[in-house]
Length: 346
Image (tube, rainbow, N blue to C red):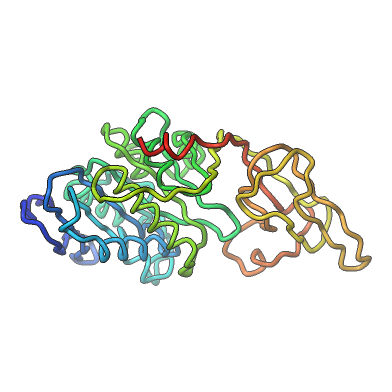
């Protein structure tokens, strides 16, 4: 397999290279976009589209590639809008697939060229793209009722700095713990992409943008701002980073608030708000009596989630605010306020 950067050479400009992946269903090509600057610098890989419902990152990476000027760029931007376009086309996983796990690339890095479709895709991309990166940003998404967050490992100072600079409301440096919570999905030989890159001594982060299924302008704007900030911080683009005045660093601990009885949950706090212990988050409204029951924060922290969530995230009834006893109403992250903007820029 040819490495993408070898085929590009040192000539400044933009190009598209097709990575050929051999699947049992037949060979397929995966487009990889490369922007080479006029001056030497870091190799940044931005990748998204592993899960077919997580589409904001695809738009973010497409748009950052289009807007970058190679005349102003130092180093190389490698853009992979969709690691697994077959999942995106299938709006989750390829049509007709009964068992989606062989197509889930998220937990299959660095893969196996003779393995499942997901393992073949990741093995091919690892060899041709990811192994040449200095920094990898892997963009995912989660529910609309949770905050966006950047995850990385505290042990890599550059990754910590870049995760802060990305500028999302929350940052979390306990990435090994994040992976541990998903260990049932991890093959003994495989990791998530961020974990794989960090294990190679390079810098990486996992970005989770708010909302599945549809293009959410707020999340796309946050992702674009974050990639620009990272490229400026790495010296790849001129300019100054644009950061929020306040950013929460999660300690990795959280408190879950559940409904004490049935009722319509009415949140009074915004996702990303800072709250005190026993501060009112919202209330449950009884449909028969009209009685309100206050829902209070069990601890001081940052509001990570503040909307009724049922046992699943994709069923239609789980998108309704009416809660049954035991449904999750809110999640409060134990936090510390992140360091200053000036410190993040260094």
